[in-house]
Length: 347
Image 1 (cartoon, rainbow, N blue to C red):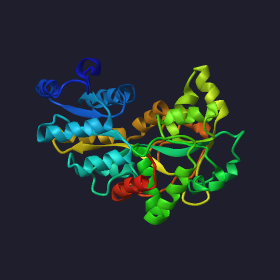
Image 2: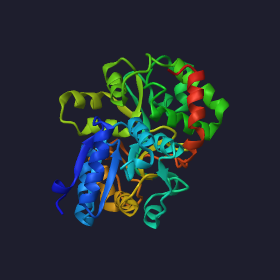
Image 3: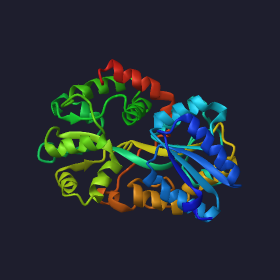
Image 4: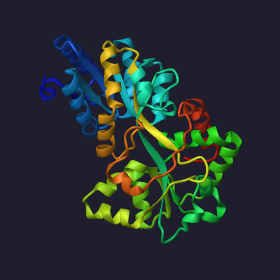
């Protein structure tokens, strides 16, 4: 079956009534299909879905939107949701989906063989499909890299007001702080956050790419952003992006102890799934060596399958030691991380 003819992509801006009419209509027309709610942008996930359909004959129906909006839609649709699989970014969103009761446990020997234990839920509610590092970017003209070799060092008063970062409402930052709690406990982490906030060069704002650009422009000397954002700039042919990467250096934090904080994009089978076997097959395919290689090459992320090597622009950023913290612990500490950030004045 040609996926170009059999698949559908639907954007979240469509009203719920329209969606509820579309997916059942599609289900009745095809014997084997899987309905996907995805926070990954269409151009990032579509090539993988096309390959999955080509290999299995299973049609994929795709709805894209922001992670929190998709979660809210799953909540409101309840058991009547047409979604079989939720794919989203950041382990915090995966944890929120599990806690909201919109996912179901799905065990698979293939998934457990392809994905290391620290990158999947202990009970099978979600599985990591690609990984990314939350790292430090700096202006080598203004900052001695020896002063910022750890996340902890970013709270040193001697560093000064040089740091740019997103707000505390950003799930990437919440997961980073949750990982700090997992390693250091609440009291020590709160002290770190207070020092970190005191070194902000400006009020937290904008997205990850903006933090890197702010370092290049001189507004900040240090920025925090996920690794794939820098990978995208490295891959860009835009002279303005090339100018940014020429001015900004990368620091992999905590290489002499626990390693750099890692996060995930991932997915799980929804509680409402009617095509469970097809949903599990899709997750298995996305964790396969072939799909993981596409993830790495096209999305500037790191494979979770240890049989696959990184590729693409991120290879230029160098090798590093990754924190092997079991990311299921983010589930335990996320709420406390938000309270710590609020008490410490991270807005």
